[in-house]
Structure formats: C-alpha cells, structure tokens
Length: 328
Ligand code: MG
Image (cartoon, rainbow, N blue to C red; front, side, top):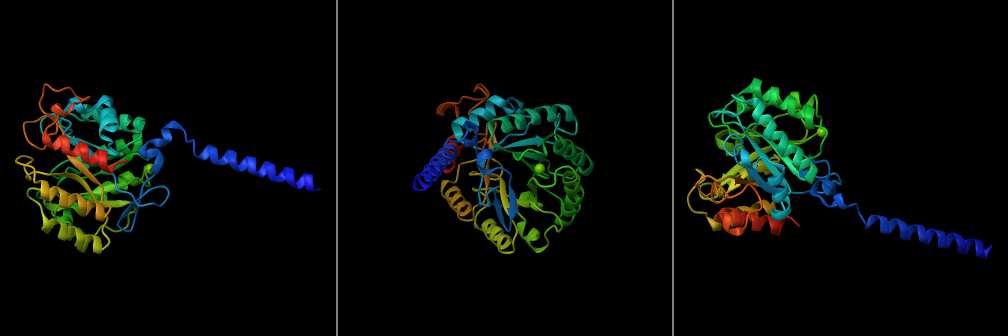
C-alpha cells in the first residue's frame, strides 16, 4: 500500500514539473506584444488586455500615406518593432489631399494593407486612422466596412474614425460616429474604436459633458503638441477622466502645433509623466522625411528603414529612446 501511495506521489510531482516547464518555455511568437496581451477592451477609463490587466500602448504614427508612401512597407514596420520597440503603429490614411483616399482609394487601401499585414505578422497593434479634417460620412462608412471585413477578427486592429475635426461640432461628430460605428460593429463586435473631438482633438471636455451612449470599447482621442498645448489641455483631459471618459493619445509630439520649431523638452517630459500616471497610451508623430522638426527621418536621401542615429532628426532620436525605455 505504501509503495502504491509513493508511486502516485512521484507521478504527481513529475506531472507538476512537466507542466511548469511547459509554461515557462513559451513558443517564440508568444513574446510579441499582441501574443502577450491579446484582445483589448475598455473597462471604465482603462484600456485592458485579455488577462484583464490595464495597459498603455506606446508607438509611432507613419506620416500621411499619400505623401510618404515609401514608409508603408513591412520592412519599415519590422524595423520599428525591432529597433524602436514599438508596441503599436498608426497608418495615417490621408483622405482629403490630392491622391489621398477620396481621389485614389485603391492606392490608399493597398498601402494600408501592407502596413496592417506587416503589423499582424510582427505581432504589434495597428491603428487604422481615417486621417481626415472634415466629415466624409459615406466614404468613411465604405472604408471601415472594407477594413472590418478584412481585419475585424484580428486582435491587432484599432479603428480611428476621425483624425482631427477642425470645423465640426461635437454634435456633428456624434452624429457621424453613430453612423460609422454601427457599420464596424455589424462586422467586428469588439475591437477598440477611437473617436475624435472638436478643435484638433482638444475639446475633450465637450465629450465629457455628453459622451456617445450605447457602444462598448470606445475611446476618445486627445492630440497634443507640447510646445503649444500645455496644462490647459491636461486639465481638460483630467476633467474628462474624472467623468469616466477613456482617453487615447493617438497623436502627439514635442514641438509647436504646426509640427515645426524647437522641441519643448520640459513640457514633453511633463506630458510623458502625466500619461504614465494615468496609464494613457500614446503615439508620436511621425515617420516622415519632410523638412520640419516633427518628421523623424532626417531627409529624403535616407532609406525607409535601418536608420542610424545620424539618419534621424532630434525628435526621432528622442522618441526612439523613450520607446526603448518604456516598452520592455
Ligand atoms: Mg474583433
């Protein structure tokens, strides 16, 4: 009888050891950010992962697809993941300018697909950004229907339905959102949807007083350029957070609101600490080679990936260092 008990004990111990070693030896791809966190959702004001843990994502936005198509490739996305530790990339699908979505939807979708496919393969999150400044409701519905059909089943994808409203009231944005969101939800019931707010995503207090009702997994975007937007915007965002509004900073940078001028290091640091304190995700603008301080790539002669320090502008070097520090 004793022998029998001893045998059972031995088998149990061996099984325990075997199970433990299986769980501490994950498959290679389980190290990607999407494999670790999986499907995202919103709980209260927080972004939470598949294990119900709060998380904040940090990454970069590509520049407008119609002006900087050369960065809309798997090679660029893979480099940003490997060398910058991005957890999320944003595909800024231009809508209004010449040769952007309204004029050439086929080219826009082709570039978008290259980025989203690369993000899925690399295991990073990806924001599909309708990079518009004005309402184009029918075209947006068609665009998001197409994207949700193609990618709605992937945990990687986040929809951003209106980049920066310029002259659209919160009531008009709400009416637009109530048309676009059901189109996405009919196909994809759960991925995160980001909604913009008036005045280049600064009037978040208007959202706080009158949020959109009836949909889950919505977050609202705040955009800031630290040289211009300072404590007043953090005050508005805190007012919104206190009223239960989930915030995602889907675009930010350290210089003036026109994307140029000197980097305000002090204010950028205050913003970073504020976002960390509130566990707010942020995306830095942008991977582009324009002659302006917010475009992170030095110039047009620099290749589309594999950058050395010299091939990045000061803002690019700063963001890369921040991401490498924050995204473990
Ligand atoms: Mg889904």
